[in-house]
Length: 373
Image (cartoon, rainbow, N blue to C red; front, side):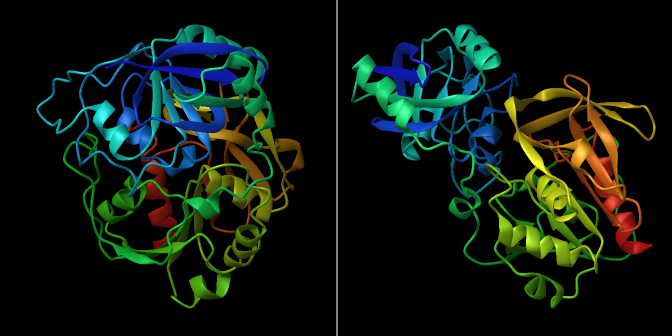
């Protein structure tokens, strides 16, 4: 049975479609992802906490859902938007449908709207708050709610996805997750403390694949709690939202980098940049997709990368001791930094992929080398 649903934006635009997944009403920042595949990895990425995610590819759900492709213990996004939902998936790995998966996890979805119009509006006006509802279908009421919704700026969303306690990790990459040029296991076993701000699980898989012993700690851990474990290196994970309110994380990183090799990804790089003296700003509509071009300024090589972020480092704010190593070719924003004296670096994109290309997996090898030289 079809359930009518509406998506209302804070600019007054209302889209009418058909609901799927759970029913109800939610508010969130409406963003879009340009990936053609990987919707399950997107759904389980904690970095989407607080957001309603629109897929630009027209049909979603055609290969179903399976228990191996999850990137966290649950779904943190607010809602999901697509042009057409496939209700009869076909794939030997599929165990359930996307509709059933969202319903099980209490996530609202809407299909049947013009996602091209929605994405063009976001690109023109910027990401904005919206209301997705199957209960209130009054346009003026929904627009008023969207305009009154809390902004993602200035909020600590990490607190909604951070694990309650630490845990060990020893799961390597899956056979499907390995690139054709996977490196053989190196000698030794560096000990990595991975600070979890909303971490995708393919990150510790990559570290484990390279022979690292990994212990995960919550993003609220202090520098003393991290350093008392005597790691060979510290990893700073991805996570949701605005980095500037996370003073506790910035203070921790500022201390940790003085003592240990450190590698940050996405939110982890933003927090690293803030700890080193830089500033961040909100992008107009962010970078979300598995086809983002990045240039390595050290070599001139181009990487096609997986990305998911709405904030970026301001290059003019970075001190002379911090070098910009990678740049986004679409808009010139900072995609990588490295400290001139400390064994510390970060990237804005996702070298662990899942889903996405494997062009940037070499960065995990660079981190391992930092810890063992």
